[in-house]
Image (cartoon, rainbow, N blue to C red; front, top):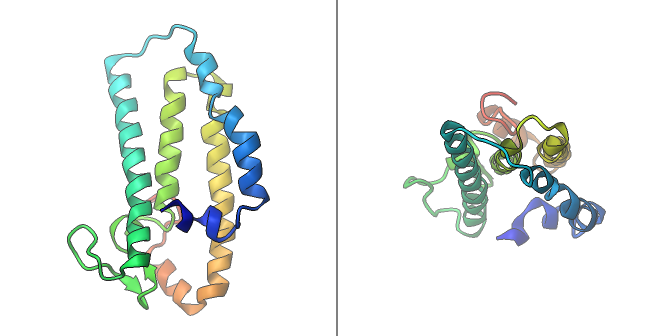
Length: 171
């Protein structure tokens, strides 16, 4: 399933992917650990909220990617028990993909927030979710331009059906 993602299809194991995997991931994914070494109190509500954000983010990220992957391999496979809806049979807009054009990014950002939430208000602990949000917005914009050129009027129709880019009902 990972081989059908933007990283592989559009960037072909390029500079962004290699730089991200070898430079950013080892340092940005672990920043929160420093702050978690210091004892910190979290209320039961905050613990439950953080677990909910993590679980929902994980499910949205994984299931959205799976829906798109399944659609590419079997365009008739039901999504949430119904036939998939797609513009010209190519651009999926049902299931998670009816909420935003990059619903998987939304799930990924939720995961990043759940990693930093236990760290409290430590600004550096929030570097990763802020950085990831900026990275994914930039990536979405590049992909949007690529899709405009590739799909032309179909993309315009798709954007009318799915007006939100990453964050449902916001952006």
